[in-house]
Each structure stands twice: as structure tokens, then as C-alpha cells.
Amino acid sequence: MQLCAEAREFQFAAVCVLPLWLPLVCEELNGMPVKPCTVVGFPLGGSITEAKACETHYALRSGAREIDMVIALPALKDKRYKAVASDIAAVVRLAG
Image 1: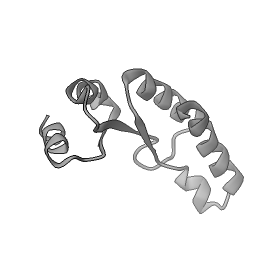
Image 2: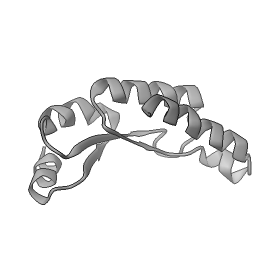
Image 3: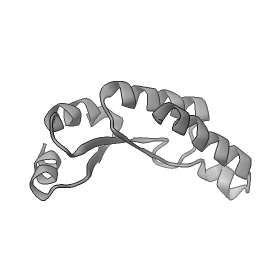
Image 4: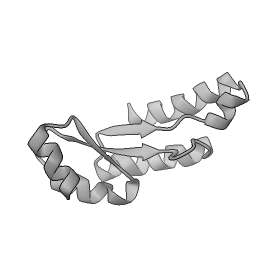
């Protein structure tokens, strides 16, 4: 609640919270220019793509207007760049 109040006061672009808090943030920021944002694949990006897609679907359905995605860091470290790109593309397709 304090973060939302500060976001309104200081005109933040977005408030980024864990998915658990997203419905509350969306309610608190309703009608405000501050965008509700949540994370996907947090904190290490090690979730499978399907899980990230599910998290994205939930976030959009819950009112998120921004998605902060953690890329597949293990795949990146292994230089599996196509897997990283595919992971990102799946979330982007859902999020628009």
C-alpha cells in the first residue's frame, strides 16, 4: 500500500510486485496512470517456458499492464541462445 501511495505521489511509471500482490496493486492503482507490473520466472529464470506462460496468463488476467520477465539464465550460461529466444518469444506472444 505504501509503494502504491509513493508511486502516485512521485508519478512512478509502474509498481512491480510479486504475483501474489498483483490483485491488490491493481485495485489500489485503478484509474491511475501508474501501471501494475509483475514478475515472470522470478528470481533466477529457471522456470520452464510453459510455467512462464502460465504466470504471464495469470498476470494479464489479474490486471498487469507490464510484465518483467527473467530470461532463462541457465540456458544463457550454457550458450543455448535459441532456447533463450524461444523462452522470451513465448511470453511476448502472450503479453503482446
